[in-house]
Amino acid sequence: MASIINTVKAWLSIARIGNDIALGIATIIGHVLGGGTHLLDMAIAFTVGLLLGAGGNIINDYFDRHVDAINKPWRPIPSGLISATMAYRVSMLLFVVGILLAFYLSYINGFIAFVAALLVYLYSYRLKSVLLLGNLIVAFLVSLSIIFGGVSSTLNVDVLIASLFAFLLNVGREFLKGIEDVEGDMVMNVRTLATVYSPFKAYIAALIIFAALIILSFIPYLLFNYSIVYLTLAIGVDTIILFSLYRARDLSSDSALRATRLLKISVFLGLFAFLFNKLISFYT
Image (cartoon, rainbow, N blue to C red; front, top):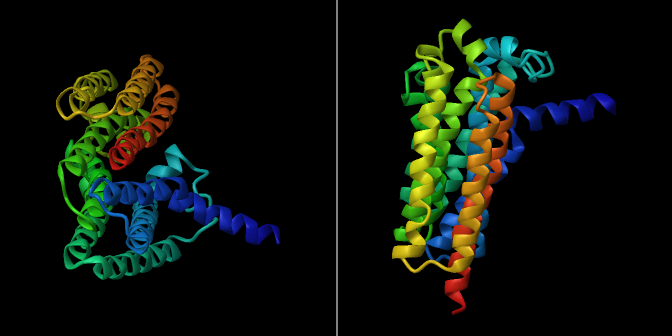
């Protein structure tokens, strides 16, 4: 019984189930922001986001197994809890099922799901080592989940603004994550701002991105008549971002790890800022 529980925990860990649920929620929010109210479409969009997210995280761990042996030896593959071959096969299965489900929503949704799966595979296999491109792909994939949900209803300005904000937030987070993983990335010749230049320059790049995001966060309220609820939650996101930058200021891997974990909260809060604003507009 204990071995079964440990196996389940290992699969949930390698899939990063919390991140997968977040992607699924992002697709639902994209659907709602587009004016959609169809519960079955929301459930399918959520499932697609969950499956593709899990497949992407597993294939990333598969290709990262040598780096993780240095940075994170407790991860399921380097620790021996899950074999590399099995992880690869499960990730491919999740990709296929997710893409097929996406085609149920529309041909465009199916195409987006295919592109997302292809990008995350190429990122894990090769592109993460390309300076800046890997960071941009990760951030783009997060924003694409919102667009995917929007396409399942209507791709409108609200969807595009939310996806832009998600993109910028995750670009900044990726720069800080480069500081978190700098030791293993240098050993494996992964080219990030932190390894090619320095953790300090990676931190400054994150600071610039987050400063731009904080300024832009007021635009929907000032120019697009977003509600005071949105503004309040947006300020909450900005506060978390600033605190994360403060936590990472010493440029150590441990501090960067804590900062990137905090930024996950800001992603959720930012998504719900847009969701609550949309719900308020429905009933006013």
